[in-house]
Image 1 (cartoon, helix red, strand yellow):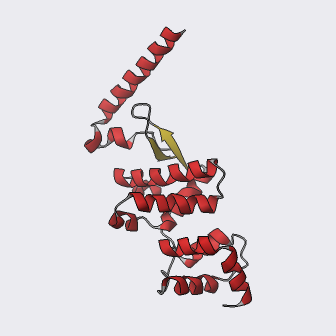
Image 2 (cartoon, rainbow, N blue to C red):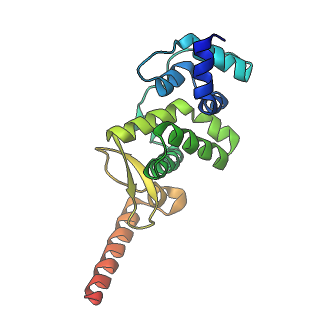
Image 3 (cartoon, helix red, strand yellow):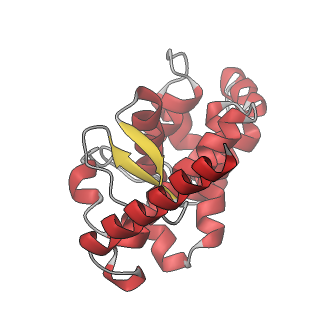
Length: 192
C-alpha cells in the first residue's frame, strides 16, 4: 500500500472492514467514504481484495426501482426494518455512514442468512438516499402501530394489516382503522 492508501485505510479502517464484510462494491465504498473524490477506485479494489481474499463484485449497482421492489410484502418489511433503524440512529446523532452500516448489520443479524444475502448493501444505500431526499417515507399504521416504508406518491397501506398472512383484506384494514379512529375520537371527547 502507498502512503496515501495507508493513511486513508487508517482513518476509515472500521468502516472499510464492515463494508467489505457486507460485500459492498468499490464504487459504493468510494461514494460513501470520499464523496468529493480524492481516492482512486483502484485503492478500494485493492483494500477489498486484501481484507476479504476475493475480488469485489464488478459492474454497476442495482437500479433504484422501488415500485417493483415493494410488490412483495416481505421486501417492504426488510426495507422498513433498515430505514427505521437508520432513521433512529441518525436521530440519535450518528454519522449517516455509520448509521447505515449499523442498520444494515442489524438487518443481517435479525434475518436468516439466505434472506439477508438477497438484500445487498447497495440496495440499503439506495433506500437511505431515497429516504433522505424525500422519495421514500416511513409511516406509522393507525391500526397496528407498525412503521413501514412507502414511496412519496404511493397510497399508504400497512403491509402487516393488508398482507393476507397477517390479517386480511383492504376492506377489513379500512374498517379496523375507522374503528380505531372512532375509539380514539370518543376517548378524546370523554377526556375533555
